[in-house]
Image (cartoon, rainbow, N blue to C red; front, side, top):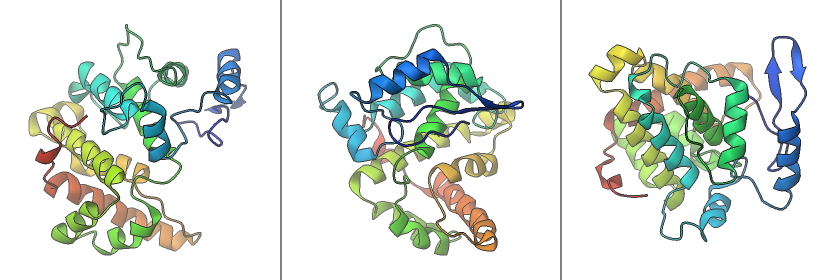
Length: 235
């Protein structure tokens, strides 16, 4: 998926031939972003502030819940390789531009498109979904279900809600009838989602390699053991 630079940067698309120039629509979007901050690359607090006027009663980011609903609405839980197979880069970028204008276009057919954009939103959060100050606890408790759940419950309120919504969402996909079709079991889901929730700050390749395994194990524990029933009805 393409990285972006800062809250108002252009989306840069990587293709096999090299670096692809931004399209005219992306340039216009970057210009608009100077006056209309993007929901991508912002903090959770900034995202909630951006939507306060439109959705004053929402406790969760509209971009998170709406893209998640779109994935399920397009039968993403019945789509092989969901969250692993990338969506078409041009379609993902086009959807990103629409979402930043509070729109989900009708006529989407491929669930990989909103799924890819949803992953991008988590990954581009200004601060990781699980804040840096909790990272070491997560790595330390990667194999302790009770301690892992305790870490989650101790997160700042908005981070806890957003993370628990994500875990509740992923728990839909690990149901055996869905896994038999998507081929995305709890291990695969944890592998693709852990980098969107946790960010190792070390520059040591050995630590990064070792922690990657623990990050995946921590997210796998949450998918398997976190009781997310309290999220029912929360938007």
